[in-house]
Image (cartoon, rainbow, N blue to C red; front, side, top):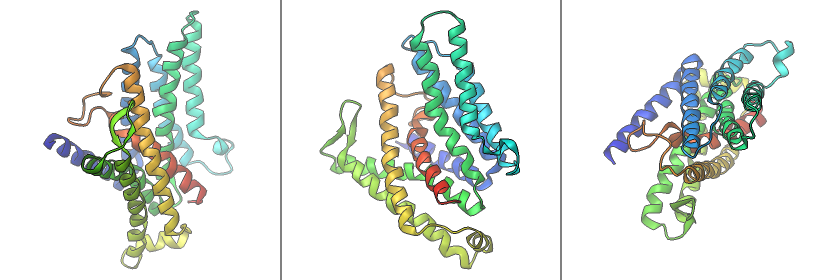
Length: 290
């Protein structure tokens, strides 16, 4: 437990530093995390005899980060401004992987799926988090990133402790025997509270922090209750993300995707819920026009 807590604190510090710095430091953190997550997924599939085209996935990761960085600096009148960098990178990666398999001349559908699936999850989910630092204002980007990275953590923490103490009904006994309905509900409630508390605190600081006041003057933010709705949806998706990762691990016969983080497993073991949460945050902030 001590190792788990120490590792969690270090991970929080790294995420907080990335959110604070943003720019290329955050892009580098996300790229490394993305590469490691795809590598762990590919390794899991290789354990059951699949032969994914790993290099195509790694090319996709690098291209997703570079394409978004290029896109963020484009003028709106530029021809390529209407092209989604996430979709562009994904299509290139998929074409490279599938073409490589077809050129081998063998009926290797399992290898095809093992190549394609990691590009969609965790790949595409990562590529939707990357542009969150390129929203209209620094405040919007910071809020989006804080909610993306920490709603899932708050959800997991409350679901774990409430589930251990009060859990009586299993949520998904075959996929994840330890998760309970009671823990799930506690996680959702905590996600809603946290998602409303973060922007509320930020907006209250506008009187004392000129930068926040300036950002609030530039962009129109949705009401606080909508952030609560975001917390509910993101919290639910975070729990689904945990179960999806568990499903893959059950299929591949492994306990964790890796062991790089003592007490926590691999990179994908830490990012599973965050990635699904990021999808909700991406949609929310785009719909809000920020």
